[in-house]
Length: 162
Image (cartoon, rainbow, N blue to C red; front, top):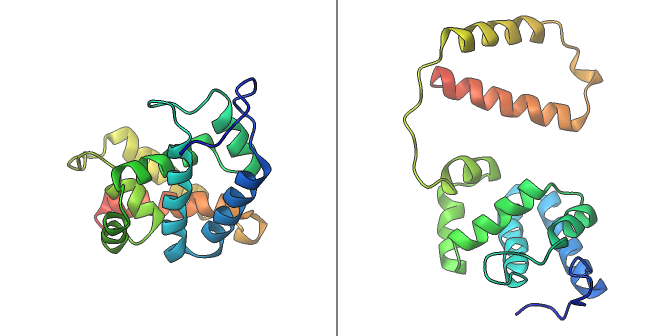
């Protein structure tokens, strides 16, 4: 059931709902296992605010700013909640895709495409990235940089079939 949000400002987040979203966001940050369920809970909360297929204008930006998450992340949480609408379905999905990365890449896709053979340009880019990586000093990176490197490693593993 949608919250009674002031219709003259559809991006307004009532304090009580804001606290609920912050609490769920804290669960997401604290662990991967419960983090998946918390992302689903968060997505469910957002879905309740939709009118038809859309959130009120500006609400997604307001929520993204409040919880320091991207619009894409929040969209993925809504897609997760929409694709697995019941607790039983989400429990099964979490067993099949136990990390958020797996859920995004495999659980939320409509169909799995066959891996494409890398082009010569992709192979050259990969060799260039490997050469650059040999000069890196990991202690100088921030957490977001390290996450990006982990995503890159997962993509490389997928390319080489690892």
